[in-house]
Image (tube, rainbow, N blue to C red; front, side):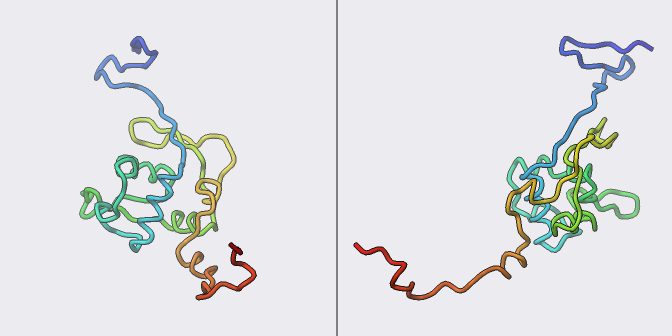
Length: 154
Protein backbone atom coordinates (compact mmCIF):
# COMPACT_ATOMS: atom_id res chain seq x y z
CA UNK A 1 0.00 0.00 0.00
CA UNK A 2 1.27 3.43 -0.90
CA UNK A 3 0.34 6.41 1.22
CA UNK A 4 -0.01 9.61 -0.76
CA UNK A 5 0.86 13.03 0.58
CA UNK A 6 -0.60 16.37 -0.39
CA UNK A 7 1.29 19.65 -0.67
CA UNK A 8 1.26 20.18 3.12
CA UNK A 9 2.97 16.84 3.81
CA UNK A 10 -0.26 15.39 5.21
CA UNK A 11 -0.57 11.67 4.68
CA UNK A 12 -3.76 10.70 2.84
CA UNK A 13 -5.26 7.20 2.84
CA UNK A 14 -5.34 5.94 -0.76
CA UNK A 15 -8.53 3.95 -0.09
CA UNK A 16 -10.81 6.45 1.66
CA UNK A 17 -9.05 9.80 1.21
CA UNK A 18 -8.98 10.50 4.96
CA UNK A 19 -6.07 12.34 6.54
CA UNK A 20 -3.68 10.00 8.34
CA UNK A 21 -2.46 12.54 10.84
CA UNK A 22 -1.85 12.39 14.57
CA UNK A 23 -2.71 15.57 16.49
CA UNK A 24 -1.36 16.96 19.75
CA UNK A 25 -3.75 18.50 22.29
CA UNK A 26 -2.63 20.48 25.34
CA UNK A 27 -4.55 20.83 28.56
CA UNK A 28 -5.23 24.55 28.80
CA UNK A 29 -7.16 27.10 30.85
CA UNK A 30 -10.39 27.11 28.77
CA UNK A 31 -10.58 23.31 29.04
CA UNK A 32 -10.05 23.34 32.80
CA UNK A 33 -12.61 26.15 33.24
CA UNK A 34 -15.10 24.02 31.28
CA UNK A 35 -14.36 21.09 33.58
CA UNK A 36 -14.88 23.32 36.62
CA UNK A 37 -18.25 24.49 35.24
CA UNK A 38 -19.35 20.86 34.88
CA UNK A 39 -18.27 20.12 38.44
CA UNK A 40 -20.08 23.19 39.80
CA UNK A 41 -23.24 22.03 38.02
CA UNK A 42 -23.10 18.75 39.94
CA UNK A 43 -20.68 16.79 37.76
CA UNK A 44 -23.29 15.21 35.54
CA UNK A 45 -24.51 13.35 33.82
CA UNK A 46 -25.94 16.46 32.20
CA UNK A 47 -26.18 18.16 28.85
CA UNK A 48 -23.39 20.69 28.61
CA UNK A 49 -25.79 23.17 26.96
CA UNK A 50 -26.72 24.32 30.47
CA UNK A 51 -23.14 25.22 31.45
CA UNK A 52 -22.95 28.53 29.60
CA UNK A 53 -19.74 27.61 27.80
CA UNK A 54 -18.08 30.02 25.40
CA UNK A 55 -17.92 29.03 21.73
CA UNK A 56 -14.30 27.90 22.20
CA UNK A 57 -15.16 25.86 25.30
CA UNK A 58 -18.16 24.25 23.57
CA UNK A 59 -16.12 23.27 20.50
CA UNK A 60 -13.27 21.80 22.55
CA UNK A 61 -15.09 20.29 25.55
CA UNK A 62 -14.82 16.74 24.20
CA UNK A 63 -11.01 16.99 24.35
CA UNK A 64 -11.27 16.59 28.13
CA UNK A 65 -11.99 12.90 27.52
CA UNK A 66 -8.51 12.46 26.02
CA UNK A 67 -7.15 13.31 29.49
CA UNK A 68 -9.64 10.98 31.27
CA UNK A 69 -11.24 14.00 32.97
CA UNK A 70 -14.77 13.47 31.56
CA UNK A 71 -16.70 10.73 29.82
CA UNK A 72 -19.65 10.83 27.50
CA UNK A 73 -22.82 9.18 28.76
CA UNK A 74 -24.16 6.11 26.96
CA UNK A 75 -27.59 4.56 27.49
CA UNK A 76 -28.54 1.16 26.03
CA UNK A 77 -25.52 1.19 23.73
CA UNK A 78 -26.22 4.65 22.31
CA UNK A 79 -24.38 7.81 23.23
CA UNK A 80 -26.45 10.62 24.66
CA UNK A 81 -25.58 13.55 22.46
CA UNK A 82 -24.14 16.42 24.52
CA UNK A 83 -24.43 14.55 27.83
CA UNK A 84 -21.20 14.26 29.82
CA UNK A 85 -20.06 13.50 33.34
CA UNK A 86 -16.89 14.20 35.26
CA UNK A 87 -14.67 11.23 36.12
CA UNK A 88 -13.17 10.47 39.53
CA UNK A 89 -9.83 11.56 38.06
CA UNK A 90 -11.44 14.82 36.88
CA UNK A 91 -12.71 15.55 40.41
CA UNK A 92 -9.35 14.72 41.96
CA UNK A 93 -7.54 16.87 39.38
CA UNK A 94 -9.75 19.90 40.13
CA UNK A 95 -9.28 19.36 43.86
CA UNK A 96 -5.49 19.39 43.38
CA UNK A 97 -5.14 15.80 44.61
CA UNK A 98 -3.99 14.28 41.30
CA UNK A 99 -1.97 15.60 38.37
CA UNK A 100 -2.89 15.19 34.73
CA UNK A 101 -0.85 14.79 31.61
CA UNK A 102 -0.15 18.14 29.99
CA UNK A 103 -0.41 16.91 26.39
CA UNK A 104 -1.94 14.00 24.54
CA UNK A 105 -1.76 12.75 20.95
CA UNK A 106 -4.83 11.52 19.06
CA UNK A 107 -5.54 9.82 15.77
CA UNK A 108 -9.07 10.02 14.36
CA UNK A 109 -10.55 11.00 17.71
CA UNK A 110 -8.80 8.32 19.79
CA UNK A 111 -5.93 8.87 22.19
CA UNK A 112 -2.81 7.19 20.90
CA UNK A 113 -0.20 8.30 23.42
CA UNK A 114 0.71 10.76 26.14
CA UNK A 115 3.36 13.40 25.54
CA UNK A 116 6.59 12.60 27.35
CA UNK A 117 6.63 15.56 29.72
CA UNK A 118 6.00 16.11 33.43
CA UNK A 119 2.43 15.83 34.63
CA UNK A 120 0.75 18.99 35.95
CA UNK A 121 -1.62 19.94 38.74
CA UNK A 122 -4.59 22.22 38.16
CA UNK A 123 -2.76 25.30 39.50
CA UNK A 124 -0.10 24.97 36.80
CA UNK A 125 -2.75 25.07 34.09
CA UNK A 126 -4.99 27.72 35.63
CA UNK A 127 -2.91 29.81 37.97
CA UNK A 128 -4.61 30.35 41.29
CA UNK A 129 -7.64 28.17 40.50
CA UNK A 130 -9.63 27.13 43.55
CA UNK A 131 -12.83 25.22 44.04
CA UNK A 132 -15.69 27.40 45.25
CA UNK A 133 -15.56 25.76 48.68
CA UNK A 134 -11.84 26.47 49.09
CA UNK A 135 -12.28 30.04 47.94
CA UNK A 136 -15.15 30.56 50.41
CA UNK A 137 -13.09 29.13 53.29
CA UNK A 138 -10.42 31.78 52.74
CA UNK A 139 -12.92 34.65 52.72
CA UNK A 140 -12.80 37.21 55.49
CA UNK A 141 -15.47 39.73 56.40
CA UNK A 142 -15.04 43.17 54.93
CA UNK A 143 -15.20 45.85 57.59
CA UNK A 144 -18.05 48.31 57.24
CA UNK A 145 -15.78 51.17 58.15
CA UNK A 146 -12.12 50.64 57.30
CA UNK A 147 -9.67 51.43 60.10
CA UNK A 148 -8.72 55.10 60.11
CA UNK A 149 -5.03 54.43 59.48
CA UNK A 150 -5.79 52.75 56.13
CA UNK A 151 -7.68 55.70 54.65
CA UNK A 152 -5.87 58.12 52.45
CA UNK A 153 -5.60 61.57 53.88
CA UNK A 154 -6.73 63.98 51.25
